[in-house]
Amino acid sequence: MEHTSDEKPEIGDEVIVELLLKEITELVIDQGLLSGKALKEDRVTNFVHPEKLKKLVDLSLGDSPLSHHEIFELCKQAVEYSVRTNHPKFLNQLYHGADPVGLAGAWLSEALNTNLYTYEVAPFFMMVEHEVLAHLRSFIGWEDGDGIFTPGGSLANMYGMVLARFNKFPEVKTKGMGNIGELVAFTSQEGHYSILKAAHWIGLGTDNLVMVASDSSGRMIPAELENKIVKALEQKKVPYFVNATSGTTVLGAFDPLEPLAFICKKYDLWLHVDAAWGGGALVSQKHRSLMHGIEMVDSVAWNLHKMLGAPLQCSAFLTKHTNVFHRCNSASATYLFQTDKYYDMRYDTGDKSIQCGRKVDAFKLWLMWKARGNRGLEKMVDNALECSKYFTRQLSQRPGFRLVIANPSFTNVCFWYIPPRWRNSPETPEWWETLSKVAPAIKKRMVEKGSLMVSYQPLVHKNMVNFFRLALHCQPPPTHEDMDFVLNEIERLGRDLDNIH
Ligand code: ABU
Image 1 (tube, protein in one colour):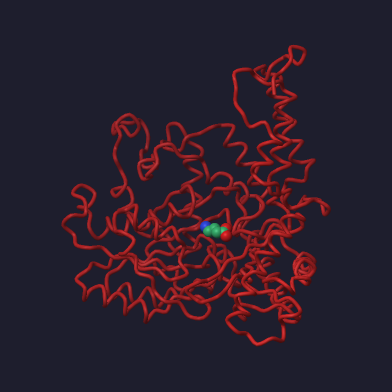
Image 2 (cartoon, helix red, strand yellow):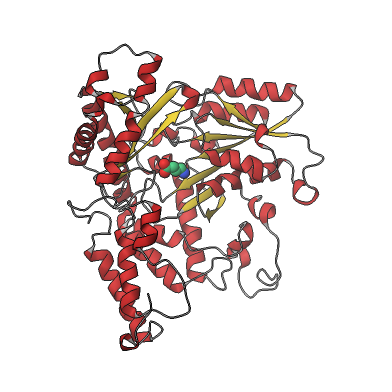
């Protein structure tokens, strides 16, 4: 795409840049990209295969600058070929549309291009981060503590594993792991894969992450955890860390925190909770009991970009310990964290982070929390939970739909769709093998039509073949009408799959 001389001035022109920014803002509004503003007739996705997309869009980068018009056309193409995550029928992942007030905050902090390492360069945002972390901790029940915003829940979980190790073996920071024995961490079979990756990254080795069995609803079984800890001790290994999950990725299960905390206390292990998904329950008086015992744990990962709908990414790592976090991670770079500064250096949060440069993620959350208040967010969480209960009830009454778990704890509703011919047949291994092909076939159809996106997966350790997982969120607020649509659409897309093999 070469520009022509009559299309000058170029994009470098200040006025043109301002125009482009205004046009992009209008594009976002006119195209219904704000959460709650998707048009009914909009497709969730306009899926094209990668090779075709390469032909439709000029992705190449070259010597010549493009004109303003050409740049804007590319922005329109970005919208055209992106998934409309703000669409009420995008129910595919644990994140969803971005809270529009949060989006405004994200835009502003992007424009300010602030790097969150010292108070000196980020005075306002440092104070905001400090306040937001304290507010999040108050929902856990901690009056005091520490924490940081991280680029995603995987990193927040890794912070937990590293802090736990430092707490028990501070000498690891300087001497390495050579003299402390073989460390072992524990998580449930349903735990997020980031714990496995972290076991590799922090030098435990993936064999030293022990998977603990879960019950039929996906909750870690405390007695199984204790058995595994005892076994590791018998093998002369060094148990040090347990990851519990509040809101498992697929089944939405909440591990029983109180009994797990007692076990961890007995064996002197750090209890971390991956509440990346389920943390949203904490803002609801009605549903926070799902995390009963949360105040007893050592650290928590909470992704505010999931249930609550803050723009991606917005993840917090929180701990009740006040004096280990900075000591654990600090490197005291003298060009940033001078010790003879002219202000209160406790706000130079950057040295607690594993990153150097760090985006401002707290501000967008702070702004939306200001705009909605605790009460507004609570209402949204309650609505998402209520809609998932409605969906579960409707599904249970429909022929051809079967729940994976009879009473889902959270907004994950997992289910199979069984095409008419297979409904009254004996459920032999072949029957299940056939059923495993139904969800992928329906998924392909829904994406090609662009009407709906719901994810599917098998759960191999539970011997379950491919099933759908619906996940509801705060943004945009789901409705009963949306829920009816999902069931009707899956039926429409799947009822002629009788002959699938
Ligand atoms: N971090 C888990 C995300 C998986 C999902 O969105 O389905």
